[in-house]
Length: 174
Image 1 (tube, one colour):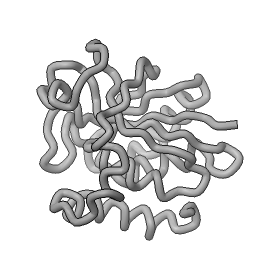
Image 2 (spheres, helix red, strand yellow):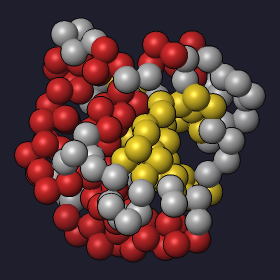
Image 3 (cartoon, helix red, strand yellow):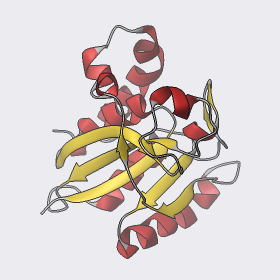
């Protein structure tokens, strides 16, 4: 039985590539969530005016990988203390957020944030909110890192995050 997890932590290309490498993850879809505009486009999201965040929706087998494992990877590959930005990506569309699908996910996310609170020099600003309507991103955003590994953004921003997942979470890799 598959479950769904949805996270926002900067550019969805970074998150997608990291989570796609994990065993038990069946599919990762880049998209938009958290705003009020129906069927938003990438250009609309980039304005920062729609309320959406760039997210990844992860379909996973909880018998193989737990939601807590996904949370640990999520917190390792982005800065949860950076408000509305990740590195040079600035705007509310790049915020840190966990969109929960079940009350158990909400409780796990809140517990993880509480447990990590002292691990950072700044407060964690990750939002925890109920998942709403998910809008898949345009086709060219899907599997972006796998399809464009030599693109400069991928080399300088995405690749280090993927390397961190491969090193820090080797026991969870496919």
